[in-house]
Length: 239
Image 1 (cartoon, helix red, strand yellow):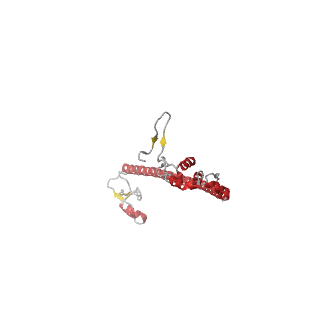
Image 2 (cartoon, helix red, strand yellow):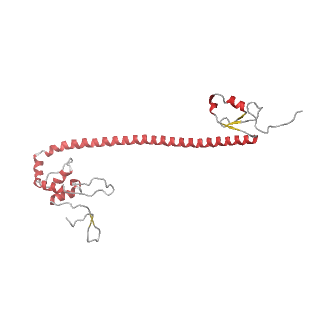
């Protein structure tokens, strides 16, 4: 008679004759003792891990396969997220590299143009100085320079422009006073060098100081409409 029957436990996936006694955690299959030993006899399968089974039903195997699928899907999802993160980081690095190269190129072109402009200005200043030196060597200019009446020239430096307005015999004293000038450091750049000497104040103020033989007081002073006193940034009572 053809009786209907079904396995109470999972059979071996290879021989289909004996009950499963071993489950391979890497193959996700179940084997009897003989088939497991034959399948995992050589090759990379020798390193597979297996668990011994006592009572292993179809439902238990389905639950095991479902768990394996969920773990695989979870790993694939996390791997996809890691891959997306890695791609995004790679894209950001490439974008930064492109920006760096572009900004470097723009900065290089701007720097070269600035160098050309300054070199052109230096050449023009040198040529103007050579041209004005001819006038400085003329006897009429030297005579006027002795008494502080020489005309201004385009290539005059700031000390020359300041000292031209006073006689030549008074210039050593004026230079000594002007070199004692001390200015204020810029508020927006405290690390900047403090201006000294001829670098303190405009040319007109230095000319007036040289003509009067006065001293440049340190600090700055400020006042306002209707005020009868002046505020200073330095204590001048000890001067």
